Length: 276
Image (tube, rainbow, N blue to C red; front, side, top):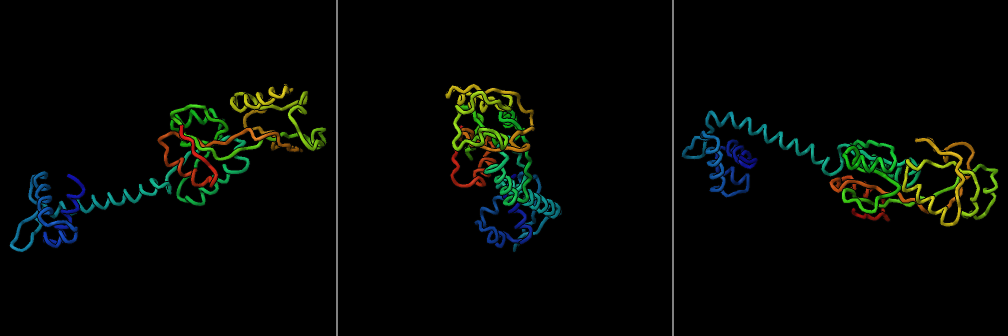
């Protein structure tokens, strides 16, 4: 039994006439008659009493008509509820993000636009390191995430580059480095650093260290920051740009087509998709 059998039956039951029901459904009358016969054979009882002009519902047919109407109505309502979710207009989207990606730019702007454009959708945000987000997306605990670095080859994940973040050096206002008009990496030799721990973002950490060693600079690290303790946001700081080394990527599993499309839409022109 298919939904069309129920629709055909309801039309004939309400019209009490095959010809009028066929015109209403825009199908040929012989085809409609065969569909009703097939339905009766599958049910094992007659739905209509044939009359010289038209048909009349049998006692079983009257009861079946009530249920058929209810079933079709519930199917239509279910489709209406699911359609907004399928179009990304409703439902829940779980997104991770690294702390530095949320300071400004495309990531917070994406969250803001998403909530403006999809007011019926629930956006659940989870701050986490890049590696934690990879595992969360793979396991299904997150639908997507904004990360700093992407593994070179991961068949389970898609990636979309949404921004390039510039790395800045934060120093006190009266620090000698703040007086330099042009800051070079070699100027940082023997300068004490507050450095984030490698476990927080191994790829990002290694890339910064590689850049320092490339210019024969060995950072003098005096300590690290704990999770959620961001030195950039504390006290009297002076920011100096060092270089455009950090990329922000939106990642999702291949099956999360909705998520990737939604964020590709809100992140604006200039983004490019790189499928894993």
